[in-house]
Length: 214
Ligand SMILES: NC(=O)c1ccc[n+]([C@@H]2O[C@H](COP(=O)([O-])OP(=O)(O)OC[C@H]3O[C@@H](n4cnc5c(N)ncnc54)[C@H](OP(=O)(O)O)[C@@H]3O)[C@@H](O)[C@H]2O)c1
Picture 1: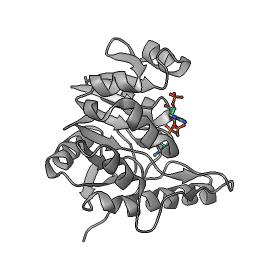
Picture 2 (picture 1 turned 90 degrees about the vertical axis):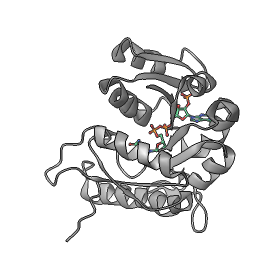
Picture 3 (picture 1 turned 120 degrees about the horizontal axis):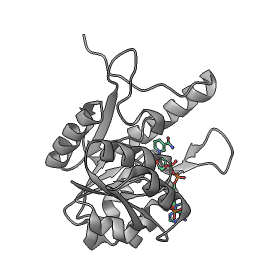
């Protein structure tokens, strides 16, 4: 499939590499085409990789990954063009982190609201699924952990989009737990901070959540 990744940071690279390893074609988008990070990634990732603007990546992808600075997410969607995202599965991996008070960050959007909901409202025609926001980029693709495959908690309004996400997550080495509509992003974005706080306290960043059953 053709995947458009909005974002050239560590998450864009980790998910881009994962999709390419699975045989998909990936275009990475940025504010300006030809940026150093995107060009360096394409040079390493090979023939199935390309880069361009956010709009180029949005047009290219049959599936879209939103992986930008959380506070820029809505601006990036506007630059991508809502018409280019219409009807498409859009993974939202962002967190609304506010680093203005130093570490640990706080959530800039919280309580009865979430960035996931803002994203879905910004592109109402896209089928947004919140995922990959509760784990560090180093473990996003085929995590090898002693306790077996970790759990990716997902949220979104479109059942078929969540079904497709569950299939793809299996290819990425994850089991999936669907926790409901996009408003459940409120809890997934807070879980990101649980992940970060544990990392800061333990000094280790190789952890992932797993839901255990009897
Ligand atoms: N890092 C992780 O391990 C991790 C794990 C889970 C979730 N997340 C979340 O995933 C998202 C991406 O994280 P990241 O660490 O990969 O990258 P990041 O540094 O948070 O974001 C980089 C991307 O944001 C874009 N950007 C920054 N400021 C912008 C602005 N003012 N307007 C438009 N675009 C702007 C950059 O565009 P250019 O390409 O044009 O520079 C770049 O593509 C974040 O929301 C983060 O909270 C991160």
